[in-house]
Length: 319
Image (cartoon, rainbow, N blue to C red; front, side, top):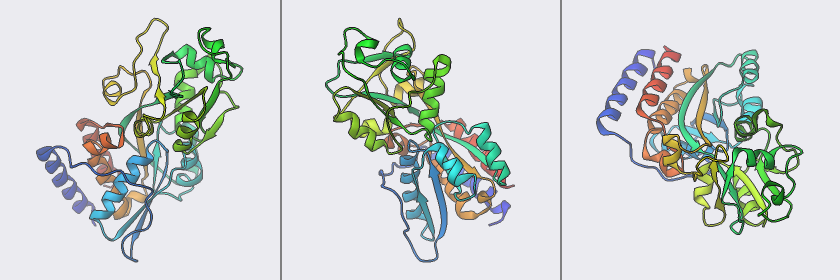
């Protein structure tokens, strides 16, 4: 496909989006594997476990519409995806629950990979506890006490009205963008993230651990909480001791009232975008990012300005 063909097709699709609004919602999919015929052209997506449900759902929908293309998705963690797959040139797209870091950009550059950023929605990062926990709301300061190295050891250390029981922590691995975002935006300069905790890149394992451990606490993307909200309790968050407790929700993340709201991204390799299957999938991804598909997965959709900006970035990258 020529650059002229791509540009004309993109303009045509954007007119359709403007005229018809959101595209119909898609069903949540499992991990995508090889489907279609034996002549598939492959698109490889790695990265954030938070972004994974979006990428996986859209990969299934894209392959349903494009019989000759195989899109594979793998939940590797944001940092793990950049270091092990994307920057070495082993994947075309990397999902990210925080912006790419300077050292990651440098690593990519040294490998001849140019990352192209697209913000594709937002998340209400969720802190959760066991259903029987007395903890209903936490401030940033209390979160810092719980999650800092050499911080609180028992719940009573944080609040004397809470049980004098060991805090059982479940969280993302250090290769996770969720870990990086939480460490930077919640703990910040107050210390460093606790090292001794049950960590995994599998958010469903975090859910399992918290829901079956009496004095547990953990954090992860909102979509995973919404799928399991009967099994554990989401904690309301306030930025200061005298602030207002706000529960995680898509509306609160969208209007900015939820303190742990954060943007979500995909990064595509500029070289990979020269290949039609990758370009077409990223274009499809961007167009779907403002629809009810993203809401149904459990995240805040991109707004129309973001979609327009993303499409312009996509077109300018290959033209």
